[in-house]
Image (tube, rainbow, N blue to C red; front, side):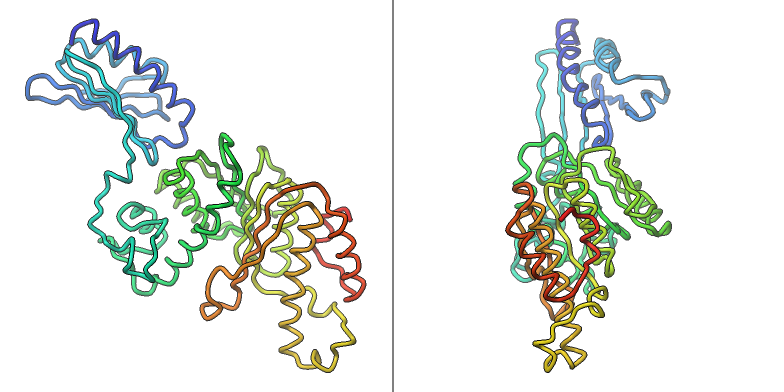
Length: 384
């Protein structure tokens, strides 16, 4: 290619490589291909290792040096294709002796749509996490077989995951145009839903994101780290520690907690309040704390039956949690996110920060606390 074209390549690559710095955590790979006659000469740039492999030879190459390196080599060839393969997107530069062009491609659109599963096969849903687009993720979390088919025993799980994402979707939009959406997963376990949200926010919603998962189990933390490595999800951090010891080093936008047992749910909600999270998604699990605490003499003739007492305790526990979130300025809604036939632990507490302390809710909580003679664990995180 002539020098004028090569100078233009260099100029346009400066803009493209600036993206490499800004989105380093989301880059899958950077490749280039020169063509001379009918022969191709292929190279790979390893951003994290600051090196390039071209024509079988490794060399050091920093991001800032990429435009000069490519444009100098381009003088020897007839054509160039330079590709930044980012999660969810591809940025492509094509050049020959006549012109230099750039384009952006949605990576999901390139994937085969031979799977008609994305709509109508299951419950006539239009899936947000689609087979044929999210196969690598769905295989990694055990939803798909190796040949890309949904496992029969995972259909229900797949629907649960997709519906959860649907419920989170509007909450993501309410956050507005923040540079990066930071998500904290409390008692994260193997983090399957966190990986799904990571995929959805970055590759479907096209928003940058960062995830922190916390759990006291070293085994599940190690498993989560391994999955993140296999998926090349570099925008994730997994910490083995007690949730009460966590001090964030960045703004936290969303806190999620899925089936954290008993007061572990309160620890998650308390952490969300302490870090001033803008949004909360919480699915409580078992409820034990208030069962032996609460007293409601007017209902003794009903609550003398153990099953009724336990079920009332469940309602009281989650109702108090919702009310305490309201005292801290959150707008709260409670919904059934899956059918109770699948699991009785199917309530989802959604909260969005809308104001400072809510005096009306504080007074309601104090009256409720006195009436039932309770001291909920979540109260220790809150200045009432």
